[in-house]
Length: 175
Image 1 (tube, rainbow, N blue to C red):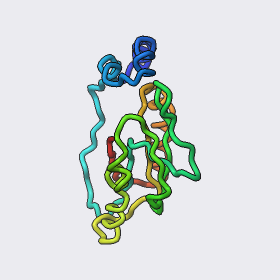
Image 2: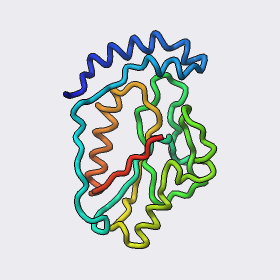
Image 3: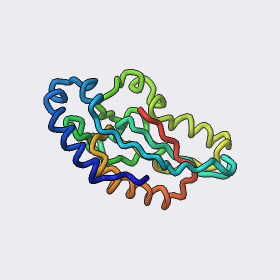
Image 4: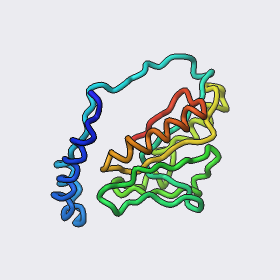
C-alpha cells in the first residue's frame, strides 16, 4: 500500500491546528498522542547480501547533526520540523559538529558523538578491513513532522546521492 499523501496532508493540517497551542507550550507528549503517523504495509526490505569487506558503508542519523561553521542548523522552532538533510564528511571532527534537534537530550551525544553518529567505529572497521570502504559522506536529518516534503523532495535527493556514491549499506541510527 503506497503512502496516501493527500490523506496525510488533510490529517496533518488538522493535527497542526489542534496541536499548535500544546506545541508552543512544550506539551510534546500530548501532541505526539494525536499525531497522524504514516503506516506503510509494504516496506521494501532488502535482505543483506554480500561480504562487508567488499562493500561501501555510510551512516544516516536522525540526530540533527550539522557542520557548525559550514551548514545552517536544522529548524527546531517549527511544529513542522525540518525535512532537509545535511551531508557530513567522514573526516569530520567532533568539535566541528553542532546538534539541532529539540526532542532528545544531547548530553550523552555531546560526550561521545558515536552515540548518535558512530563514525569513529566505522573508521576503525575500515582500518581493520572488516568493511571494504567507508563512504566519503554521511547524512543527518533532524525531526520531521510534515513528511510530505521528506518523501517528495529530501528522500529522493538523498537516494540520488547514495546511488552516485555507490553505497551498498546505509546504517540508520534513529534518535
